[in-house]
Image (cartoon, rainbow, N blue to C red):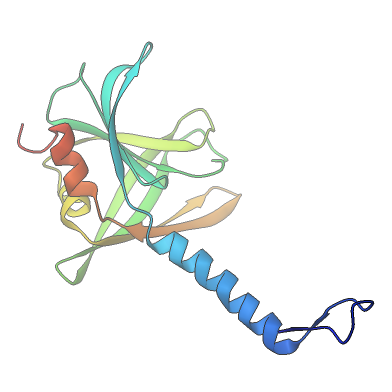
Length: 168
């Protein structure tokens, strides 16, 4: 708690106040990372065309009208990918209370913030992401670093259904 003895003195930070503030800040960061849910929308892009989009800002699914209904583009976002060639990613997805492991190869898009690949909607990896409850992934970005990501899959199934991707 802040303590002030008179109006002319600056407030003193006590250890108790500092600990409460630290816990609040850390709790807010953890809460924000674990409760991110998926959004779904239809995007009308003049270059890429009309497509459905389901994402939580960490991973994303796109389905373009110009591709077969059974195909979906899946990818991960990061602040930067060092390499322009194939990125090998290990995924663990919680499905019905058990971790299911997958190995996927994604292609960074011009050393940007997006690495992706095309998958059939019936692919085991995509199906596990749709029916899973959470995910963890890890990849080594050449000489730059080992990166990890994780999150909840709450809202993926609803997003797919809303856009008509499931059941086509």
